Image (tube, rainbow, N blue to C red; front, side):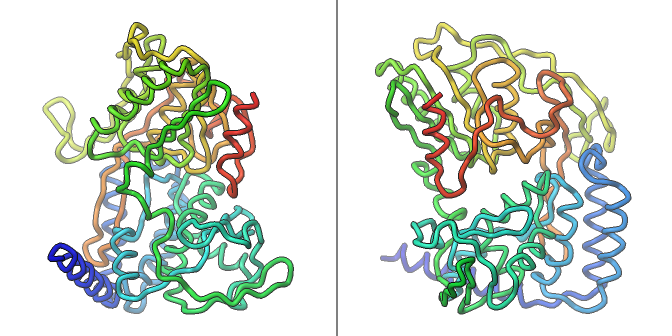
Length: 442
């Protein structure tokens, strides 16, 4: 009981702090200082901003934002303006975001706040479809296109939000918005108590906002939701790996070891590894937890790199601010004699949220022939940035991420630019099992 009371007090205090900070007004001078801070950190951290961002468009974007800083703004208002840099950066590792979406959302709900009542699927052209109820429960309106939201054309709402989404491509922006719609809608338009939704069939839905967490923020700390193993028909098995970031690496490697032991005992012939929802993490997770069991030849995780020497990583041979190009020549050795080595057919399922370290895994699987990469055509670059450095803007408290590394895929190939599966299959945003069934038919 004492623990529950302490938790409630903590959430209430968090809600008060969030609301207080959100209501604080920042002067134009303070926000200009934040804008200069952004530019300074990008210049000091990124080895090659032109890798993803057009330098001329970026200069114009900075100048445009500066001209808009005429009146005091709240943090959310500042985010609405500064986040227009995100599509120009064109890299999901280079982004201006709201701090601690999980904490803000939990405090918001605890204080009685409510979100848009549906999870959605957004297309780059502006169409938006109902996917599930808020939080992920099935909806009777699944697949229905929303034409208007409280009288405003849905395409206009989508366009305004896409102008603030980060990522490598227009398709990536739409995928990100699909995942984070309830949170971003709140941050863009504030809290809305009731929604009048006009659907494509002419039906009006009068739906109240809901006081529950968006699906993408649920289960982040739940191992069983992030990592799953199941046997499938036809001597097949499915490993779902939704992240390569987990605080207890041994818990993860114990899980995969047990999964490969079950596969050996069941004489599994076909393995599906699903990283469609995997936004990345630590490379050693997939090296030690997956490739240990499927690699059958020496491999490297990239071929070349370009890095910026940042504060704390400088040395006598690498001066602060240097940009250094290098080659990754060390090969990681396979373990084909491991009793749990899997020599059957492996498919790596990629999708709209596959990114960062899971892209590097995909590159390795493709370039060394450890399996077939399967799924929809990619929206993320095969050549990835990394080594992300995180900053807090000194006045508004918004969060800035900037990469200090750029990696070229193991083969060194410059094309295709975006992740391209070996086998392209449709991946329905409304039925995640459809791709699994399609792969089994192969």
